[in-house]
Image (cartoon, rainbow, N blue to C red):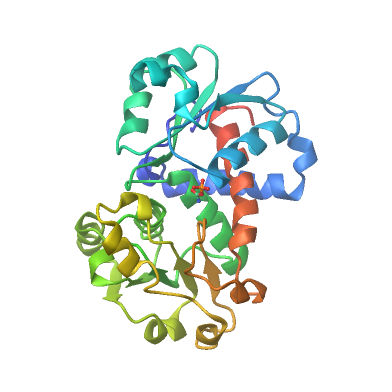
Length: 306
Ligand code: CP
C-alpha cells in the first residue's frame, strides 16, 4: 500500500511496490487520456532549493496531465527562506496548502527532515550527493521499456560515481534484482563510495571497478553515462582536470553490442558527443519522456487516487 507514504531513498519501496508503480506507468503510457482527471482538486508543491530542468518540469507536467494543480518555487530566494525560515517551518507551512511535497535540496537528509514535519507524502527530488529516487523510477521504466527485464543485465555506470546521486540510487535499487553485474567506470578520484560498494559486497552482487571505458564496452547491456558534478567539487582545478575524462563518441559506440542502450539522467555537459544522439541505441531523451509517466504513476499511488 503506497498511499500516504514518503519516497526518500530508493529502498523505501519493495520491488513489488516498485513494480506496482511501473505497471501503472505502463497503463498511463498506453492511454494517457483516461487518467486526465485522476488528480482533479489535488495540489502538488515543488520546493527546489537547487536548479532543475527535468525533475521540476516533469513533476509539474505530470500533475497537470493528471488534472491537478502545482505551486512552489525554483529559487528559494523568492520565498521566506530568504528571511531565514527553516526547512522544517517551510515544510509545515507548505503542507497546509498542498497534498504532496516534492523537494530538492543541496544538503543530504533534507527531504527526510521535511517528511518528519508534515502529514502529507514527501518525495525526495535529490538531496545533495545522496539519493534521487524518482530518477531511479525513470531509469527502471526506461530499462524495462527497452530491455523488457530488470534482471540478468550487465550494466556499465560511467563518470562521476563519487558525487552522482542518480547513480547511487540506481545501483542501490537495481542491485536488488536477480543476476545484475555492474562495471563501475570512473577515474580513481571519482570512484563509487564505499557505502555503496560494501553493501553490494555484503549481498554478493558482482561488480568490477575500472577506468577503461573502451575495454568495458563490449560486454554491456546498458551504458549509464553521467556528468562530472562541478557543483560538488571543492577545487575548481580538480574539476577542470577530470571533467572530460570520458567522452562517448560514435567511434567508441562501434565497440558496443548492437542492442546496448545508452542512458544518461541529463543534463549532459561534454561526456556524450552530440553525434551519438543519432544512434538508435542512445535513449536518453526518451528516458526524459518516460520519467514524466513514472512520476504520474508515483503521484497517483502516493495520493491513493487510482
Ligand atoms: N536528471 C535530473 O535530475 O535532471 P535535473 O537536474 O534537470 O532535474
